Length: 104
Image (tube, rainbow, N blue to C red; front, side):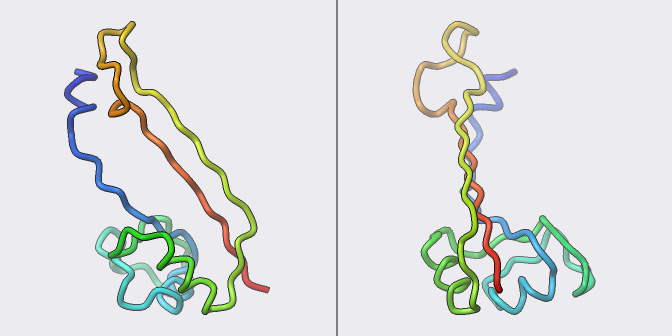
């Protein structure tokens, strides 16, 4: 079963977490709201993602809106390795990077 899970194609996405109104202000039409379409403007969400896959574009938009990076965290985890009968290549590795931005 674990091998079947490792074979599906992972789509790289830039997710957006924050208040709905602020996310719309910063990212406008590039914000994909399909996973949480009826979220009120004053509510928080972690279900939006951007319609592009380049971090530089997201960072530019945040900078233009007066945000600065406050923190960054990254992880790399291995789902299963050769000793558990899995493949020995990089496809089994998953990574997650989180960037935290704030505006004064």
